[in-house]
Length: 112
Length: 111
Image 1 (cartoon, rainbow over the protein chains, first blue to last red):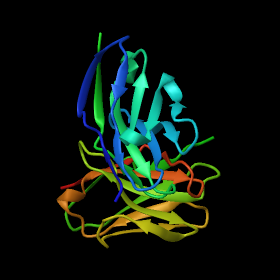
Image 2: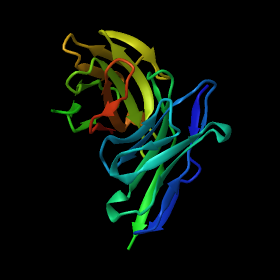
Image 3: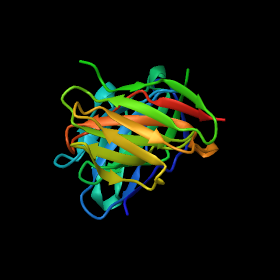
Image 4: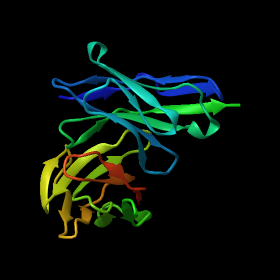
């Protein structure tokens, strides 16, 4: 069965510092991978997705993620974090676009 | 272009009652999926509707049922509410198996 692990429950970074959020997946075939962001009390906004092709994926708001099959990882990165990036981040895997299987999320706190 | 909309925004019910949540998909989308997000957790897949049929279902009891209308909008019904059903219910729409886009959610509180 497919699953997603986000090892970090909370991460704190200083504004302007770089960010990397980790995501590991378990799936037999080539996965469809996603990163979503959720502000408090809100729905989920898609940051980026990987279906196939180039393993470095660019998303909105300056985010990027790299698919590494050998490590079963799809880590999210941003070179310089802004205070408005504080939110909950979810990694998800899907089988052919049907059900999304989400990780438990990583809460990002940005300090001045 | 309107995105995914959900109603109501908030809802308070008591144990044993029934509730209906509604979702209108993004324009051009024909598939609706429902997720339950408990506090501090990631969303859990409930089911997905396409062409007015339930295409896939997650690990939820039969108390959870749904419907999709010819205009692609959808309802989620929960019978015999339990305290544990308190959660944020998220609707997502897509074009068949393409990327899912989420609505703002309905916050259900069961007392």
